[in-house]
Image (cartoon, rainbow, N blue to C red; front, side, top):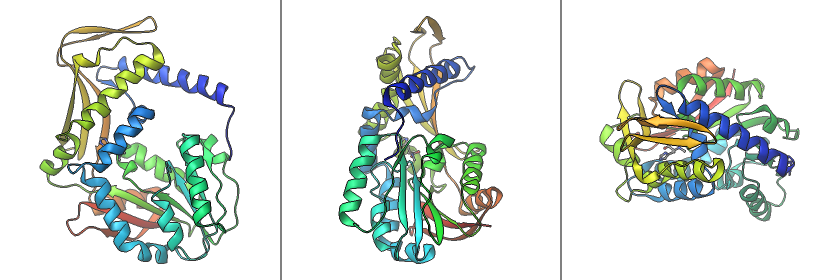
Length: 321
Ligand code: AVI
């Protein structure tokens, strides 16, 4: 498995985390990049969110995969190399790999080496003939892609499930998709999950679950900043708030300061008014047509999609044109 030296890598990551936090909290609308929601505790809480009745996203995507997996495998075709940025425990790729006709290999990428290694062993035990090479790194950087070995295949297909694309703003999503195109060749493919725009009541319930798991997930970011960067946030003085923004077609997640307060991070001091928020995440919801346009602009030709009967979620297959 390709991996950078852990000590140096960690120092660099902490430095970047610190800079991102200082920059985000210095803005007029305070923001924190949503990728930092996923430390170990945050990833555990996200797994709990995926199990919630109120959070339809994971369950709906899993139902579509279960129902349409053979058609997806057929669209991808034989002798394909599957590349999965942000693969996590690779549990969505595993049944797809098993359904593909003579897959050429599987290249998962993730920032967590432990989870990736366990998944690689599990997949190799189930599919012993399949070449699996895992790369540890952030798929939004070139370094992670440079760690991937070259494997001969009839076509390469990027697999990007989970509606992760929704957590990028449209401009960033467009750039990410264009970045995928730049790493592929004409005729290569993309299989990608997107949450669809729908009744705001359903959306707001999903991000304000009755068990308050999403609230803990959101507030965990403050605990993380305290632990890793030595800040003095009092998470009890912040409340979770999520709401649907109809014009921007997205669910926004914020942390609301319950009082006027000061927070210190390594000599830097941040003032919060009562009611002021830190914007911690956007989750964009697409129409089928809107997402097809995004694919087109990035350099993909949309080929087909699979959705649930309520049109809550879609998995698109597209090819580089
Ligand atoms: C990972 N991502 C697709 C989730 C979403 O629905 O946007 C993250 C999440 N945030 C709150 N709940 C789930």
